[in-house]
Length: 289
Image (cartoon, rainbow, N blue to C red; front, side, top):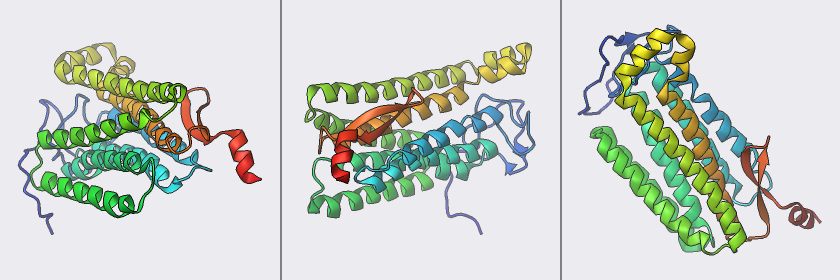
């Protein structure tokens, strides 16, 4: 039984690359700048696949550090959404399958973004009308985007949909930031901006990989496997966007909590570089008493 989809984007294959592997023919609309099936018979793009592991670990790290926080379910889901993007991207790059590309990699980016939008929209007062209106509206938005993109998989539409959700989230976040005391606002803004900068750095490296793929492929072939691995731009994109997304999600979580009780929560670092939100020790102690 075939999926009821009209695929308007034809499969894309780079010259000289294998177009068929263990998982069948490559049907994705993108073939990244990494030679296919070089290291393993079951993985199309080695480094683009395994570079998603930090995504998964960062998402799990964030989810595990939500203990003691209010609205924990939505915050856990937000962090697990980051991990899910890593899992989906892992499967996509291992198979170069179009369904994995759309259903496990591209659309989950929209879903996690709308979940982030949900968190900031619900912040500042969980009123009855919000509970009845916000979640259904965002679910309807996700379903609408999914149906349109699944039937008409135009990458421009995906980019515009993603940008639309990001603009809404950013606008709401700016409103919430203005409600924080200056010191806390500065701390939260710094974390959000650092996540955005790291994300954009990964995007820049990814574009270099796309624009200079032929030259990079020759360079990797000349200097060997180690240099080849270190110059995989899309793998660096995964690593940097994973870090950036993790920091942005932590910053968003802190913003949503601090706007309701500015003195009750703080941002701390695990292992010196992994941020997470926790109740301030004195506040947690008072609540325990």
